[in-house]
Length: 106
Image (tube, rainbow, N blue to C red):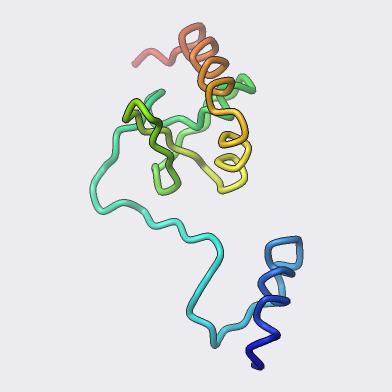
């Protein structure tokens, strides 16, 4: 594949055409790896964007974000993480409100 075609291919992948894949290129856009050991995130490893929307969505913490305070937040998808990054404080506040209200009891 010509070098100049790669940015176009990556642009297509990033903006909707997930079917055009260069199998010769070992790189990627999103890579989520299941951690070798269990990670403990806030909200009992539930997705804060889901909690902010009123849903309990468990995660494996393969996609995560660490706040300035050192707290780990886990996400189910890259899309959820991208939305969260737009306004982390708002999502954390809304997630806390729902999680504290509807906390799962073992």
